[in-house]
Amino acid sequence: MIDLESVRLFILCVELGSLTKAAEAAGTVQPVVSQKLKLLEQRIGRRLIDRSPRHLRLTEDGQVFLPKARELLTKHEEALVFSDETPLHFSLAASDHAIGSRLSTAIRAMRAALPANAVIEVEIGFSRRAKDRFASGQADAAIIRRNGGGPEGEILRTDRMGWRAAPDWRRRANGAVPLVSLGSECAVREIAVSELGRAGVEWRDAFTAGSCSVLHEALLAGAGVAPLGDISARGLPDRGAELGLPTLPPSDIVLLSRARTPAHASAIRALAAAVSGTGD
Image (tube, rainbow, N blue to C red; front, top):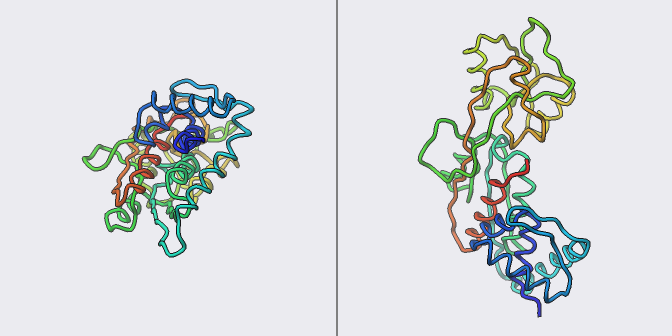
């Protein structure tokens, strides 16, 4: 018989890309995960992943087994749910600038950690909105961007800020820097404008986006330059020094959370592991 906990850990390893992160998400340690995977491979008789403590790659057999593993775990969860039970609800509020390209990884990790019939709600916006939703009890967890330190929450990572633009974008000589941002309510824009003013760099608003994904598309379209952290830059390099723009201070990516049930605690651990991971 296949050990279902080993299957769950296998899926978490794939979702998070690391045995270490899977261990964090499951509330255990990396050697335990490694041993569970070894036992799973022995039971199946196939090698599923080529692994190291921080990185892994699915083998061909692993790619075949992954959808079967997900189906197996889903069927198991469904068997434990009765029609008269209220589905568990988990709500996340996150800053677009704070969760960035880790959002899909975070959703996959939360889904793997929660019961199959769980309802997940995610609201993306500004840090102050995410913080307010958490404080009011409307969110079980919040991912925010914080400058200048503070006592609240768990720091998941420090995110390096930079000036991002399309690879072929060039700044006009003696012209005002065209700024692409999420608008006047955005704290990242406030920091960027402050640093531009401190450095005596002339700037102008060129494009206001409703989300970081739209902002990224605007950059690729050549609309200008944007202040973005590594977590939301989607691979665009920091061109600040090349463009003569001031250095931007790093920010902390912070998790605020409350675990109402053991299942919520599992989802929060998985969320933290997903957002603190590398590979942005």
